[in-house]
Length: 499
Image (cartoon, rainbow, N blue to C red; front, side, top):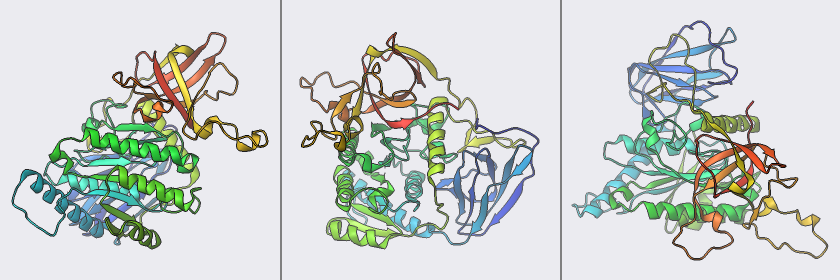
């Protein structure tokens, strides 16, 4: 349940009649929820079709749009909070949308999928002008340009075609967190529409952190832990993790017919511009190239940024299709405090599951079309020995600043050197820190190497809530019960505590 929310009397509903190719846009305040029901016609949210008569509930400051190709009528039910009718802070109907352009992109990607599948099966070729390889798309754009929305729309359109596609959706924006928690980069094969209901799970729920009542829990993403919000904190580490993720995706995606579905890569705003990102242009271009190489990109979509489009055409235009697409006028400028609250929602949802109270009087309330039942978890508070968990910090985060070194001295550690953290020592900074638990090393590998932990996938996340140094024990919060003995973990700069 969202904090600060009270349940009182049912509230009146409001109908919106949408003309063809228009959309109803809304933005929710903290502590409010909204139920939207399709009364007649056809409508979709970020490419996911709405079912007639079902109430779709949104919360946790969700910002979304209900679009219709043919026209529709929707019913909106806001919630009463603190005895005051709280409608969305912003709601309006827009007649200007980029959906036609996005649909054209989808059609081009679909042609590539069909052509690639024909080539795999040895079927007659339908169109020689279309390359016989699946679409592998990199989406670039500045901050607040709607990159994730475009990725969701294109993914949802692919799985809606009824052709059995299961495109891989990749998120390399650590500030967003994808299916995990902020600080992670991840990838998952998507075969059902991605649910939109809150800012805590913009790419849908997964089996690793939520109950199995949602169909979207079939998603089993791959995670790597970067541990920071911004790429500028450690560009070398970001480069390596992107390449690890790409290699892992290739290794696991061995079915030729599944490969024909292609993949779509969502990126952070820092990849689009050095202004305000802390990255130099050469660092930014190296990270883009890491994505291109790791995922064998053959299409780059640039959202509303002409200079970046020209730059990408200059660098990759000879071998990669670079296409500029329009930015939606409904994209909202997101400030730092909003992103901090979203990180809190994500971490709370990872530990406790997602629960959004529907407006009273709303029957058949759903989250993305699934009933709101048994969507909460009971995380475990466990006390473990310091020796049960080997904890590391990576690179610069574990080092003294250059200015603190003796004159003429140089660093002995690289930016990707794992440094062991001793919880018993002062300054460990572990209280309230997010720790990523790593998969065990491959036992078949005879050789161990210093940076091995960087190449291990993540199997879960925990929070350190207390340290008992005299007893050499720590208390952790975990969404799942189980022994952590012998595990390895990495700590970054993210912290979280229950309010």
